[in-house]
Length: 188
Image (cartoon, rainbow, N blue to C red):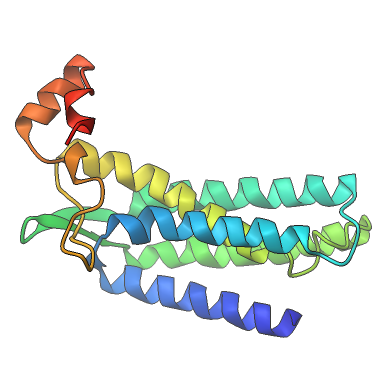
């Protein structure tokens, strides 16, 4: 089971890296909802761990989550955002690969230290999905406000609608946002 989880996480990371380096239209659900779902799945998976979750495990998992969030925020600031054909387009520069490498090396080092402290759940594969989800959510937390501020809508979803399009749809909305009057924006 652990080997399968490691292979799945490596595949997810490889897929995310490839898509970000090539650049793509950014869809709100993929940017925001998918990492949230991944985080929830990770938390549920962590709760199903056959080993008892001790205080030292929680401390190391929290440290890993903080590390994941920090790298995600940094990735979010590095992503180039632009409007292409009227929708949001994002691309990571190649130099962002060092963030992934640093994140992976730090995660391995944290696992080794956690194991030395007897935090066997934290040193296992159980926290992998939750930390990956937190990383992606942190990146989204930086990218989404940048997109809203630019006024560029997310690319349409499969149903043709743009996720959270009401937040970036017009100059009138931007003036309401500047005035703090959000009621009309959410009535659509």
